[in-house]
Image (cartoon, rainbow, N blue to C red; front, side):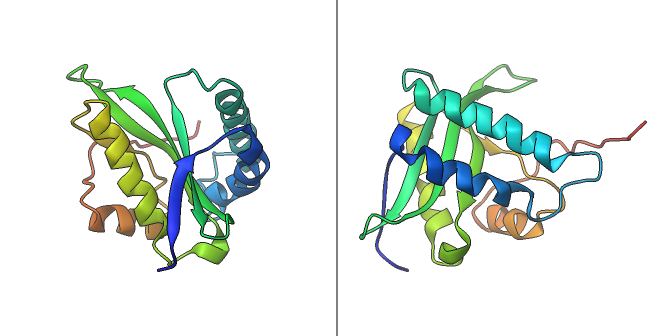
Length: 155
């Protein structure tokens, strides 16, 4: 694993982060999901966050020692449906194709856990499309367990 450092993302990181968003649908989202609509939604959310650093969500960027961006994690508070307990939620976790398999995702998840603990959360959640088997396998290895399975029927 190369030397990786994690820092808070700033508006100067916007171009890199936006360039990474198409990776969210590389695995082939379900047929009823429009990849372009997904990209537009994620783009708007990321732009809003980086233009308003006072919000509750946070974006961390992973970089090499040469300050080459490698990936990012976007975190926000969530609220459990049944217990109404606040928790930390990973909204986005994306590693560049060139940095895949080098421990960048692990470092970003470590940072997410640190942020969650620092903010007093007992849980760290994330959502992943069923078709994204590589990510699901990683999350299982890191101790994430499945909770509620969402099923969709297109009408």
